[in-house]
Amino acid sequence: MGQDKALLSFGGYTSLAEFQYNRLTKLFSNVYISTKTREKFDFEAQFILDADNSDFAPTAGFVSAFESLKCESFFALSVDTPFVDVDTIETLLHADESHLDAIIAKTPSGTHPLCGIYHHTLLETFQQMQREGDHRLGKLLSMKQTRFVEFENEEIFMNLNHPHEYEEALSRYNNKN
Image (tube, rainbow, N blue to C red; front, side, top):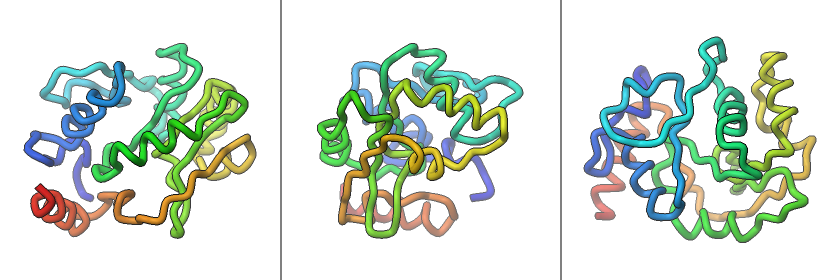
């Protein structure tokens, strides 16, 4: 993208992070932003800070979340997927069972590991992965008790990784609203 995606304006908010935070607070009683630093955000929110010496990888965020929250499980959503809707999230929540390690969205194009529920049973594996510098979430999910929930609509999971995808998302959002 060439810049911090979390700070791109979106949906009438000064940043994608604020957009995601505000819409998720309507669904969940506790919403947290996993980040290396909270100073870059210009809105009030609950933050979970990654360890200072951690890599820029999702594994650091998962370890910090489990260690900070001390919860049995949590729903994780990437900041750069603004079209994951309430129905999708509720479908994933309803697919959750206590014997599973993770519940992850899947479409015909593949899995979406940053849209799903992660159970505390994965903490040790995430810690080991972090120590080894292995950040392959797909590998982790294939080794554990993971339920992949099928969705047909690829557009819901649109990632904003390049400037043209961001521009397309802005246009799509503005046309929808």
